[in-house]
Amino acid sequence: MQLILYSKPGCHLCEGLQEKLAQIKNLSFELEVRDITTRDDWFAAYQYEIPVLYLVTKDGEEKPIPRPSPRLSVERLEKMLGDYVKTA
Image (cartoon, rainbow, N blue to C red; front, top):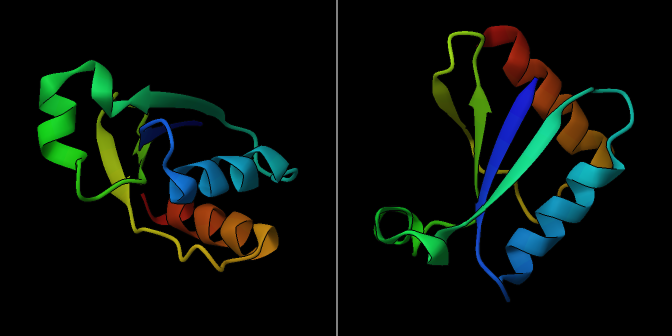
């Protein structure tokens, strides 16, 4: 499974989500972090929305994952992602 996290330097919500994703143990995934300040199209699309998380499907399509609450525990985030992957 591959996840993409749109982020930018200094975004505390982004850093918090990335730290929680790194702590997930029961789901296997590759995380690609994309800095929106490196491309104008990413910045225009996500400057007011970050952090934004996408699941890359087997077809290579990027499906947006509903934004998790910053207060969500690592365990709840893991369950949410697992449930989402099952329905994707």
